[in-house]
Length: 499
Image (cartoon, rainbow, N blue to C red; front, side, top):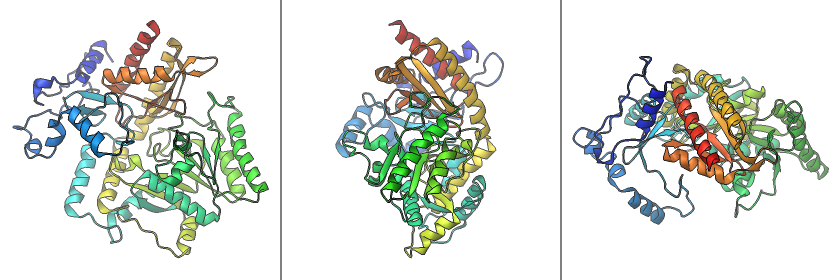
């Protein structure tokens, strides 16, 4: 990307003057090569006023764009739960529109979204929006009526899974999916105890908070449930085992230790539950052989293996469609959600015939009023179609390799970067104040995120030590976007180091 094009991209992200009344077009110019600067917002997106935008004139999003942000903050504090957080709490963003990898604030300022793995194929992707609009105008109803949309989608999506995974249960969220997955596992194994990873996150229900240490380790989180046994995350950077050639077997051994201890007490194992690529735990890339050995240990005593793909599935890892495929394993149960509907609430559990039949044989029917309803199924199909048609999995693979390479160059330049790791468009940058002791740079990570936000680039912090910069953008993120991200991060880190 030329310096001129990069500067223009920065200028575009500075947004629209507040006195424009949404009337200025965000332009897309040609760079020196004569090629379109695809990193800039779409030329079809106009910021308009009531005279030219019928939706605004008719009040479709009038209240979103005219209420001052300060008033929105006051109303949120008064009306919503006091422990419902927002991003950038000191100065939260008010977002009123979205387009692909860009979000727009109430004053017209465009921001580059590097963290929204929910809007998988891009904010308000026109094909997904149109599919939802058309189906919503025809029918949306209880999932216990017959409708072909959910069957067509299930038929299509199951072709992306290993052949033994043949049954689907539709729900509305990742939390529901993981709750149902554990229910299936408990019915099938007739056991209760679950093994989960340190730093894991699987949802917000009471059961899943007891399983997920990302939540239950927080003040007031209550700790793990009596049935939950937490094992170390397979972290080869700051964990106990760092040799990538042996760490997979060694970390899997910690699971075997828990199983042996439970068996000595006369207990069995219900399930091992883990994200295929631990996300909230710090964008951890498990070492080779980890899941293969864990799955063997668990299955040897009759337990089942659950892969949580809610954040990492649908081609994000680049080399494969599902995260578990990276390690060459086949789970017994898979949970999916977030990117499945590109922001629309739809999720699912995928499992084997044997587990599904065991669940049915207990004599209690299962239904979900809106899980897999016609609108949700139609939107999910549109997302899957876009992933294929726009080659987004291949794009994630190529762009992810490029971005990792550029970020590793930054690591050579900036001592604050302790580790760069990732697969596809799922990348973590771990910041440390000392590369020998691995002292976490928590304050610095927070400051970097804040400074990048001031440059209209959105990052966030994850990991148990809150020192890992998270990068999980919409899959339409471009190489030009990546260049801007890296150059801006370089400038911010240089400023910190110069103080």
